[in-house]
Length: 301
Image (cartoon, rainbow, N blue to C red; front, side, top):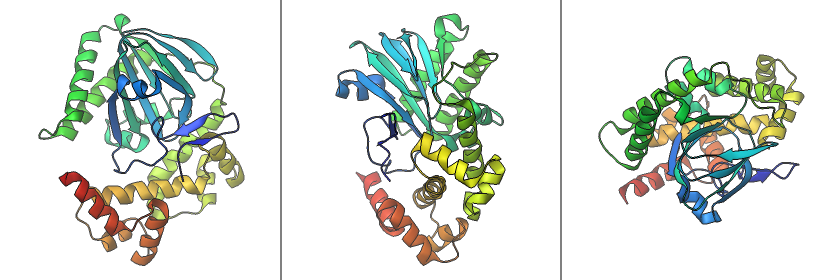
């Protein structure tokens, strides 16, 4: 299902801004300069939201007009903005804007330090940090530059260093965020919390193929209510979100392991490899074997 869908208020839901296709690779982290995407859109990123993605934007230079749900303001140089999933956000950058946009898929938090991921997953609203007020400003800026450098490169133990840098950055920001009261947001906080609980339940049980009533019970609402929340915030059904998580894990296994298709099928709880192949093809448009071969060819280019 395309990710550039629009909800009733006309706000599109993107994987990455301006892209209407799923990421081909199952990477859980994306890092790019502000200019890389904004320049393509005349420095304007129109209001949109993401499902399943957490973003950190560092404005190193320049200014930006900022919209966060129904709140508008200005983002100054030397600021970091964190945007959890489902928050409407948009920018108008000055042409001299420099900085980074780091996008994390929520499953990535599972790989971070114990407890840290849970705190950010459950965080309901956006927050702006003025680095000039943070004692560790130079350290944070240095780590952000290093993270971008490692992301672009192919050095030994690249992913381990990226994860370590990102963990340190989030720890420092989390310390600054203690006691912060979230902005009043357009979308009810309770609905966001339900979806966050559903995401946690999917993460724990997606390979066991539980019925929707099981997940609804873990969230504490009816299956119909859960579906309504998913449609409201993610423009997908609850079952779509479960299937998307299974597909992501399948992609990761096909790309990063040497497991056979049968082994991947077994790990993901499918009783029949043929059924897994049909499921994967329905979700991605290609069979698992072809997907693996295509990624192998891309890595050789």
